[in-house]
Image (cartoon, rainbow, N blue to C red):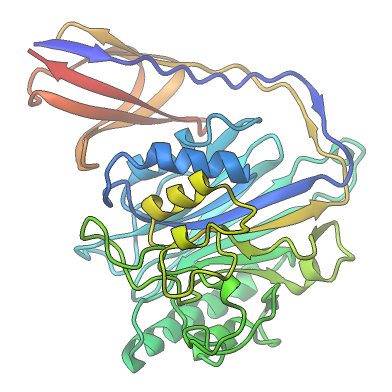
Amino acid sequence: MKILASIFLSLLCLPFVDLSAQTNINVLSYNLLNFPEGLPLNRQDTLRKIVNFVQPDLFLLQELKNSLGLSLALDACSDLEGNYTAAQWWSQQSNFGTDFPLQQSIIFNSDMFGLVEQDFILTSVRDINYFKLYLKTDDLESGADTTYLTVFVTHLKAGSGSSEQQQRAAMVQNFINALPALSDNQLAIFAGDFNVYNSNEEAYQMLLSPDNAIVFEDPINAPGTWSSSAYPFKQILTQSTRSSTIYNDGAGGGIDDRFDFILASQDILSGTEALTYVEDSYHALGNNGTCYNQSITSCNVNNDVPFDIIRALYFMSDHLPVVMQLQSESNIQVTEAKKQTVTVASAPSGIFISTTELVDFNLYDISGRLISTFQNQHGGYIELMSFPIGSYFVVGQSKSGITFNAPVTLLK
C-alpha cells in the first residue's frame, strides 16, 4: 500500500502591523447546515468564497457535526489577512447520546483577540456555548483596563409547534439562569439560529428582558411576525436560501423566515463603551428584499453582493449568514508571534507527523466519520496499513491551540 499525503504547513509568524485607531471588527454568524456532512459535500471551497468576501474577525458557527467541520471552516479562513484560531472542539454535551448531534463554536482573528476561557450551558436539546475573549489593544502595555467581549453561540430548537416553542423557552431559561455567574463583563453578544417565528415568542422576549444579568437588545429592532407575507422588512429574513430542497438536505420554501440573529448587550449598543456597535452595519448577507419566497439567487438585481457570492450562499447552506460590525475605541497592534509548524508528509504505509510541540489528532473518512484518534504525538511515524483504501483527513490541534488539517489518500 502506498500513501499520498499533502503537506500542510501552519506558520504563525507575522510582521509587526499597526492598525489604525478605532479598529472595525467584522462579525459573522452562520448556520453551516450539518457541516461538513451536509450536501453537497466538499463545501469548504464554497465557504471560503463567502468568508473571503465578508473578511470576518469573529466567526460564529452553528451546525458543526464534528471537529473536522471546525477544522475545515478554519482552513476556509486561511486566505484572510491575519492569523486565525479556532476555539477548542467539544462534542455536544446536552442531550448526550442523541442520534443527530450538532455543535457551535467560534473562529477568531488572534491578532485582534485572545481567548480567556470557554464553557457550555447544558439544555435539554443542545449546548449554548460560551467564550470569553479579550481585545489585544496597544494600551494593555500601559496598564489600561482589559477590554473583554463575552460571546454566546446557540442553536435553539427548531419547529413551529407549541412544544417546540416551549423547548426554545426552556433552553433560554437555562441560559438566563447561568448568566449571573458569567456577567462580570457587560460587553457581550448572543448569536445563532434562534428558530423563532415572531417577536412575541417567549424565547425571544426572555432574551430581551431588562431583568437579565446581561441585558441584550436586537440591533435592528424590527419586531413583528417575521414569517408573515405582510411583514414589511423582508431584507432581514434569513431562511431558506432555496425555493426547493436541494440534494435532499436542508429546508426549501424560499426566503420567508428570520431565524438567525446577533443580539448585542446594552453596553455595546450605547455607543459609550470601549467596544461599540457600528450603526446600520447589521444585515442578512445577500438579501436585498426582492426574493421573498424565492431562492436567494433571485435577489441578484441591484444587489451590492456579487452574484458569485449569492450563488455560493445558495449552495453553502439553507440559512443566510448575519453580519455586523463592532468598533474598538483603542488601537489594536499585531505583534510578531512565535513560529509554530505542523507538517504531515508521506511515508511507506503510513504518515509522518512533524511538529514543534505535542499535538493530538484524529483521522476522519471523507464523510466526516471519526476513524481513529492519536494522542500526544510529538513527531513520528503513524502506521495506517489497517485502514481501507480511500481518502481521509488528518485533523489535529496542538497544545497551544493551533489547529491544522491535511487530506491523506491511501492507494495500492
